[in-house]
Image 1 (cartoon, rainbow, N blue to C red):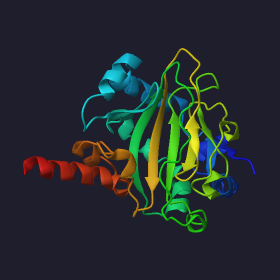
Image 2: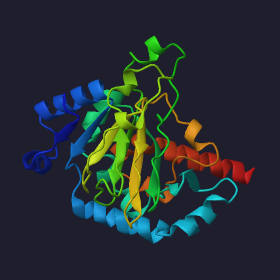
Image 3: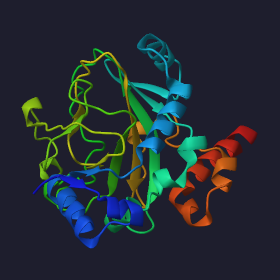
Image 4: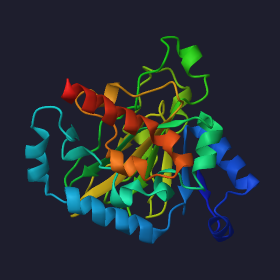
Length: 282
């Protein structure tokens, strides 16, 4: 079973996956714990996102290291040597529904997480030249202590990785351990068990929250920014990875400007803003 599924020009023009492509993507995710979808987003749109990201976070590694040392709540988090995760402001290019409610991607995610799924977090991770292999990890602990229970459940959250530049092996793509979402939680993963391929602008890598993965070393001379959008069942919220800051940052005016059908998907962004406003006022 391949874990790479390509989107055709016909599907892109129709803004809908064919039944066979949807079935192939579902089968790949179920068996491998991940699926790489080729050509979901227009490259021009990704370039616009990169420009917006660099306008806010186009800093060198030294500046990011200093920023990460500031006390919480801090939008910058060090997640490895020469690796930094930032809380992206969902405004401008990052508030475009074609990004987070993409018609090619949204129905597939809804088929896995339910039509009432929610976006749990939006961040970007930049690895800088000289970054070594990231610690191999899954995005959350298993929901239950019994491996035989957790490994046989449907997925409850999916991390969608969207590269903002073309990422080859020298730059260091996200690598995955295929099928590890069905392994016992404490089973170790050796680096040689990881699989990675070049990922182009417009592609996205969907990773089950249980699947072991890692950022590959950055042997290039450029920083590698990847956007991560976490979609989850409506009862799951990732508290573990966002203890010292919110997981979503969308100004209320940007939320209000969203089309009404899209607002439930980002309702947690609204909730976080309103809670912060209440606490500030009191």
